[in-house]
Image 1: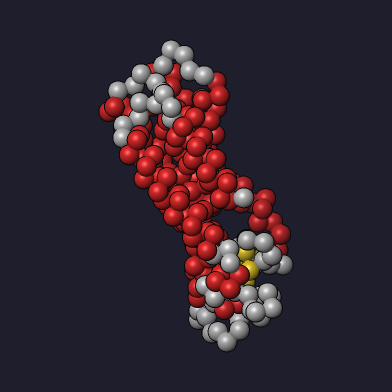
Image 2: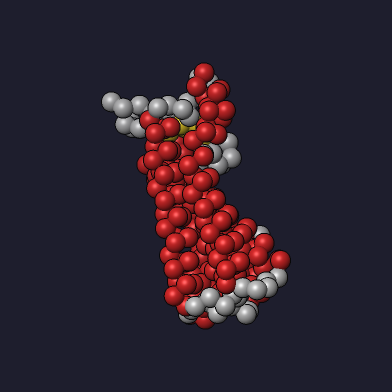
Length: 242
C-alpha cells in the first residue's frame, strides 16, 4: 500500500497541483523527488522480505520513518508550494514564502524535541502512575505553542494566496492548507519516531526474536535510560538516571 500511496501522492503533488505552478525549479524538484521516492520504494520492497528485516530491524524502522515522512510530510508540503506557485506572485515572493514556512517547521520540530525530552525526563510516560493517568488532560496545554506556530503558517499561506491571486480553485486552496497542516503534524511526530529508532538500535527489548515475539524487557542490558515499548508504534517510556 505504501508503494502505491507514494506514487499516487507524488503524482497529485507534481502533476495535478503542480501542473500550472510557476514555482521556481519545479521541474528539477520533481525529478529529484521522483528519484528519491523510487529509491525509497526499492528499499521498502527489499525490507518487506522477512529474512532481511528480521536481521536489520532498526534499519527497517528507519525506512518506515522515511516512508511516512515522505508520504505524509514532504510530499503534501509540495502541494502547498505548488498552490502558491499557481498565483501571480514573483519568484522572490515564492522563495520568501518557502523559507518562512520551512523556518516555522523547524521551530515546530525544535519545540517538539524540547517538549518531548522534558516529558520524558519528568517521567510523564511511565505506565500506571497518577501522572500518566492525568497526562493526556494536562498535555493538551503543551500543544498550544506548537499549534500557534503551525497556525501562523496556515494563516500566512491563506494571506499569501489572497494577496497574489484574483481567483484560485477551491480544491487547490484546500490541498495547500491541508498539505501545510500535515507537514507540520509530521514534524511534530518525528522526534518520537527518532526516539523509538534509537531504542530499537540501542536496546534488544525493542526488537523481535525468531518466533516474532518481543525480547523480554531489559534482555542482557544495563541501560542508563530504559525504554519500554507499547503495542503498536507508541511508547510507554521509563527513564532512570544512574
